[in-house]
Image (cartoon, rainbow, N blue to C red; front, side, top):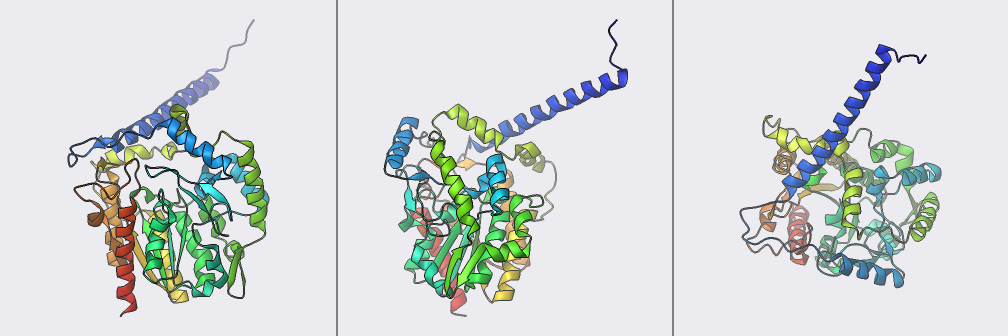
Length: 400
């Protein structure tokens, strides 16, 4: 005679299955709602945006880059989503704040061709010789792909514009970075470089928390912050643990010839976007809830953490913090929460009497030529406008 499953156990199993299915359905709905909101067209534009670049064209660019010895660029933000990378961080006892040092990489293509570059010893898009005399760096600019210059040649980046204005500038940024990364970069570099100006650039997708974030957890420990960079005279370099991490990472990249940041299969790309998204916390519903819940006016914890870190470090090391906002292209009605993020960030900076560069009205033009033809990043013209606005603000501070 078969023994029956006790009622309590059956109830527990049924409830667990039901709640699991309900949660997974909610995650999928969150992801779908977010994408729906992102791709609604603005009434300001009469023509549809250009179609996506042909996958075969993108794949051909990648194949050519690989033949010439270029590797796909590594984004530190990806560590959050990949078990292999998290294990590598643990094994090497090193959490990178930049991409592959001294490596020829290909980055992205938004209509100007596949961007390639050779990264410096820190894994950023600067001349490596900059770090031989780190004491002479006047400005460090921190952020995500906007600051890194996605997807334009280095000569058109924000930092290039500052350099052409006579400011010895280091861009410390990688695609996908979030405020917890900004704060970690500030902690590692400001004490060792001691620049005169620290620029931090925010974007609507920076709305976030930071507790439990791997970068916050790792760099909340003073010893790890201090050990990240080694200073020898006026020269700076990464610590020796970095070679262990990046050595194993490069072997992994080389063995996965089909894995790159320009995935040919759009369905696979969509799946990976879903898996690696933040919708496990049902983030996609927040914009809808914002319509029914009054805005508290409070800045999100992640952005506040990055702002406060820059301000406190600059008080200690004698630099001037400047904060910049770069909007989404106006052609998209993106996340409804973007306008809330903008107003809350602006209000907080004004309340704290911080220097703020608002590029929203500078980039939203009737001709829509200040953003890439096939992407969400600024165009060469857009980056120039951002660089000019920051240069102007820095000049104002230097003449006071």
